[in-house]
Length: 532
Image: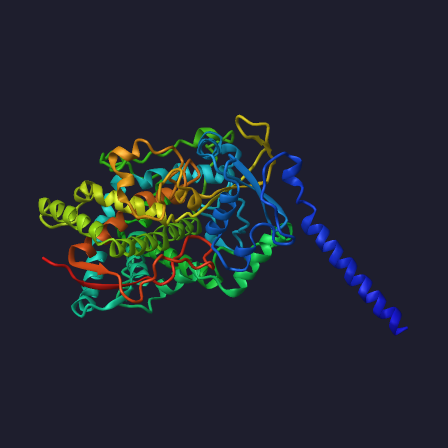
């Protein structure tokens, strides 16, 4: 009897193992049947084992796949058992992100607003709601609106300079990534929520703590992410909130309380939340500053015409919807800008000649503007632009872009069809480190982005914020994020010198637990007062 029971258990266990193996490998002929080049997958894990086991970030894992497909315009790979397509050809990337974006309009994020109210923002909305909201919000991101917020950013930068003064007095070693995060928190708190956070001095700030929770996932969240890569059909049924309940409640509470206070006391501020309040009360953003012209060249692609649905159907601007846009404003400007500032300072410390050249440009420009960081002064910092662009090349905030095919699509110039619901990956980090486009890619060389060299740069080989109508987050970063990066760097380099020290890690390494951005590990630098 016991022998029969043991045999039954063994047979049952064997059957389960065989079924799981079949289930997890049954799709591995998907790309071969379609005559698409692909990277041979491992059972269970596909081609993303390093990412699943937190040995690499997802952009670094995609870079390995990208390299194995050298010589091809695109290729297949597997996330667990799920077939994905990775693009290598900039021409096809441009076609998919821009001209044919209607086939790839959604990111297929499985957030449910009832359990994750902050998910109803531009990054995750789909269909007509996304189109309508984007059209409404587009006037909020003109350079004129950004100009209004500059004084608040400059004020935060001066608090940062003051805070670091004591460290510079003693030539101390500082961890610049956390310091940069404190600065961007203060900026977003002021410009996005109308709050004086002062996390540069108050490291226990509730706002900072809640922000860090978004970018520092728990072990459970990492486990769910890995499980989702292996069992995607199952995980599509499990709706993971974009943020924990306490984070949702915190940001929703702040926005609702601030809106109520302003409306009750007739308070008006030059910040992002005020623009949203205008949308709520008037149905549109005031156009008094929309026509201001300056040197920032950002084109907002018209997307309303791409929808067959009536745009006359109103989109109700609830407090929750407004809070979600403030939250994504926070996502766009907090960690991405902090990473750019800290990685830039790391490169300037490793390359002191570039740091000195940048400082000379800043000195000359600021003298012309009375020593003040003005909007016009920022536009004249051309070498600064090149330095920041090169930083974003080496350390792109959006290390990879993903789009889900919403209707069957034939890749132009080929017989290959992308089926509906297949995930398409644009490996930004890999492209930015491809010697075909950037010779000696690990070298930090701002001259790549000189006015002359930019002319010969192929389209869609520089994608730090994405491209096309769907890159809403990129627009936030491009206009607002770059402004706070330039202000922060200008304020710091005007006063201080940054150098490598015994604790400086060369090269910069990244923490694989980050879900959203390339998140560098601690960056230690020595700070001292600059030579006058």
